[in-house]
Length: 175
Ligand SMILES: [Zn+2]
Picture (cartoon, rainbow, N blue to C red):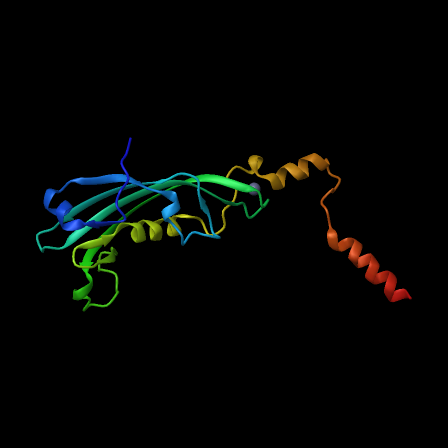
């Protein structure tokens, strides 16, 4: 059983100890996903800090959660697990002299404030990046859009609300 993580941590403590920070963030702590997806589970987080010979702090972050979103094919609710692993270079906000450019090796930079690292913000970014732009049932047989087609056995029983409207318009045109 994992403990809950604080939303902000003093990351230098963990750099010094070289230990893995792992725990959960409560699903209701997240807000930026609203309207995009819902969190079904709390979010599992693993953070591993290292300092290289140049004094640069890097962070490996693994996040995973079960989320739900509307399938863009059948519009039914779809539940799936997302997992993302990323490597960041941690910089202090006050040494922002190189701008926001990614490092040469492609790692993203995440800024901390006086040793305080916004874990919630970082994890929220990761979740938003991990969720597909167009969520769809992966297996076509479990997608509601296909069920409807099978049910109709070749005869279309898809409701077409505008078909009736079309007839009304046509009828009124003739008058
Ligand atoms: Zn679907």
